Length: 91
Image (cartoon, rainbow, N blue to C red; front, side):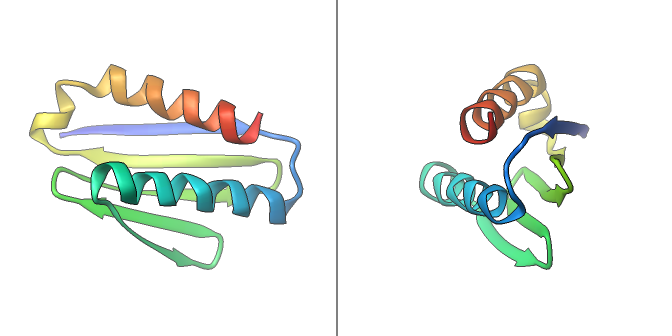
């Protein structure tokens, strides 16, 4: 298993950041059949082969994920895609 831990700074208000992460969750659900749920300021996501969370922090978000065996081989690509989406949605 491989772990991902990415922190991304932004200048959005808390409400706008939460809305942007909500959009990310919708895309995850559509594209990858991921199950998501909010617990306070943390969006948890899971599916076969990956489990993780996106935590809303003041002025930043933190993405933590544990990749299963198959996705571990593509860790670099997964991290790059996460960074791209965060930059697109949060600036």
